[in-house]
Length: 299
Image 1 (cartoon, one colour):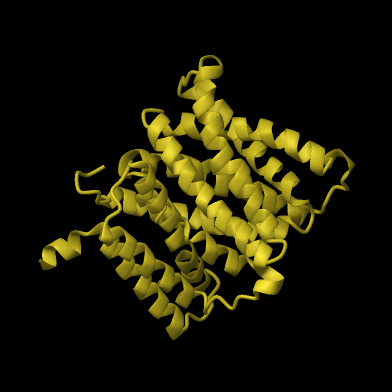
Image 2 (cartoon, helix red, strand yellow; image 1 turned 30 degrees about the vertical axis):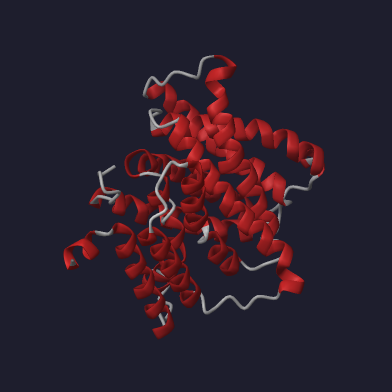
């Protein structure tokens, strides 16, 4: 991480990649929830992702944590980075649309800034608060406003906001206790711990062995969720966290709605409206404010 908290060009590129990988999770969730209950879906997501990454530990000769004390940091990060937020988001998406869920997820940098400041880990600078606030305004413009129905959507909104707070706590724990852990090891061990916890929770609540098997579309969504939006995404996530810090890596949630719009325009040929262009410009200005180099150059 640079001394002034800036993000270098490599990590900006990685943030873009991560925004695409995580942006797809809302789409995959929406499809997979048609065939699986929420907690079983989370169980499948983390377990398949862990199984994908475990063989790579042998390839790169990564050692497993030693004893209970070695596993505890990964268990703590798994709880706040996977088990709680994944469960809260999919439960929230049963009552609110994926677009609204992605907007609420974009509050993660704000919660992360607050968590880091309260813990004394990072300074609560006006520049960071202003940048995150501008970014949230941009995301709201991009998605066409909040259009909240608190009577019918209040629970889903609260669950998604709680997930955003959980991500902020996870970033703090990972920075404090796993800063020297290789990204592959951190991703694999936290997903392995998540799999054990979710097996207990989903087993008690959903009893997945009693569920009817869904169709191929649902399974493809689960595979995409596990491979792209979880296994690969967390390797990228912990790489950025290790290099650029917790607040900076959580900027990805501002980029997720933006990349979804751009991919729709480039890949699917969807029309990009003037409102979406305005929202993108506002988000871009927010990222420039957070980065700080343009402001220092202006001075």
